[in-house]
Amino acid sequence: MPSLPEHDPDDPVENAVISRLTGNWHRRAMVKRPEPDLDELFEPARPDYPEGLVPFREHPTYRALDPDTKARMLGWGWVAFNKHIMDTEQHVVNPTFALVIEDTFDTGLDMDMLTTAMTQAMLDEQYHTLMHLNASSVMRRRRGWRMPETALPLGHKAARLRQRMARSEEGWQRDLSALAFATVAEISINSYLDLIAEDDEIQPINKVTATMHNRDEYCHSSIADEIAKAVYHRLGPAQRALFREAMVDGLEAFAANNFPTWHRIVDLVGVEGGHEMLREVEHDTSTKRLLSDFSGLHKFCSELDILEELTFDWSTVTIEGQ
Image 1 (cartoon, rainbow, N blue to C red):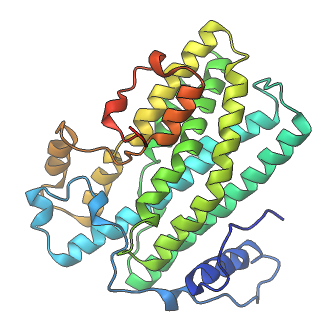
Image 2 (tube, rainbow, N blue to C red):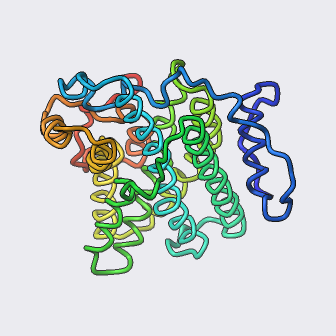
């Protein structure tokens, strides 16, 4: 049994999220097990997703939308946020952890201890995936909106890695690309989750889901950090160069707004002029990145002594203490 995400049993929302999580996990074996009613904790008057994270929130086309259409856009924004996390867990992180368990990278670390840590982390990631799936499901039920994850494209972080791997000629290139992306994902996920966890205006269930996921990831980020460092120190020049290049690709992917998904959402909602709006915002150099706090990744790259060798513009992101 994997450890459940850390939670406060006295907090009704946190307790309900965890109870629903364990209820879903054992559903096949315990069909009649009663589940907590997360729906009763839903607050319809609150937005599902922070409008401040919508990259086109200041565009006249969006500002002219009626309240119901804006609410639907934010509902899809929440589904997309959860899907991006689930896609990252399932298509970036867990496959890379599996490679570590197979000793693909020759880390030099104790394999018994490493295998246990990686297996535990993979089980944790499955819980996280279910948490975010549950959070989207509650919103859909309470709003009465049919907003299936399958209507959206693969999260752009996972899609970017898939594109890299398709272009790679050698297996070691694919493996190191996966390791670089998973390292960026695990070290940056806390900042990504903070975008929701630190917002007091949105749906409490959504905030709590991000908060509890965040607690687990502080442990995972330290594990990913140590594995990547151990691997990098044992690589040859060509392998190190590819890892650094993949790191930059990963940094860009994890900082970016997900415009391919927003293009799909404006179709699903039926926003007239939506694609033109997105193209204008996407090509506006003043448009801010979705993820700006890269303190953890900057520290990782500094400790690995590769900052000067990366072509990433650190001046475009926030670094704690600078």
